[in-house]
Length: 92
Length: 244
Image (tube, rainbow over all chains, first blue to last red):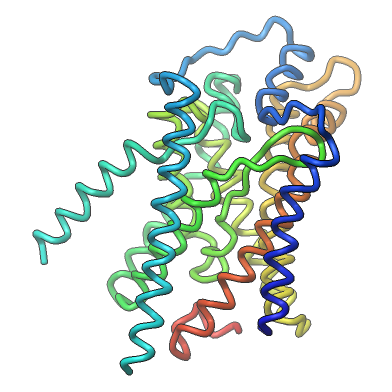
């Protein structure tokens, strides 16, 4: 893959995130599954969920902390892989 | 060696407790939101793929230990991507799944196992998805998505489509397919009184699948980038079945 292609792809990724935010300044950007829940209640108003989650994150802050941590761990394993391979290639 | 393995295991358990999570709002079918018969149906449907995946993982670890790092990479990719809830053009948020890349690298059944682990922890600890809906969620994200990605990738390569374009199309389509399947699962469980299963599925698709289109493209782009890196790095023949 050419370097210019890679840069183009990265810019495209940024655009995919930024464009919706700029395009829809008033949107709520809530979760899609919360909306699905609404549709279920509309189609089958009498349906009662028959099981509750055992544990829920204590607050929105705790939730986003866990998110950031999850992303960080994922990214660090990926970075480990990239660094490991680069170094072993150099020393080969 | 054993000691090190134990350390890694404990670390992983600890990390999982903290990390395998996702907001209450994202994409999977919520806890308790599938009637019992459908919950069971999808559980049974997922099981054979899960067992297949376990056997394949075992074979990889035994016969090709040099691929362990790549398996970790595939898992980490799911980890990272499913933590990124992104805004979409529909004004709501959803997240990529990341299961397509691993499917291309190792074959789809491996992702059935990795995907179920992620879903299980999310359901248990973070109130995302659910224990009762794990069969259905696993079928869409860890079975259907990876298998469609893998099948499409093979097909595209057969027609000599550019390698990275193939990765992009296959992973993006697999991601989108995950959400189409989720919509169908909800449609079957909650048929609309007027328009039936199809009408109901379309309603769910309008929410899930539409939101997912740009996010699926993002996952495709990212998968192609990482795949490029992997291909540059790995020795000849390390990738699955020499299909590249």
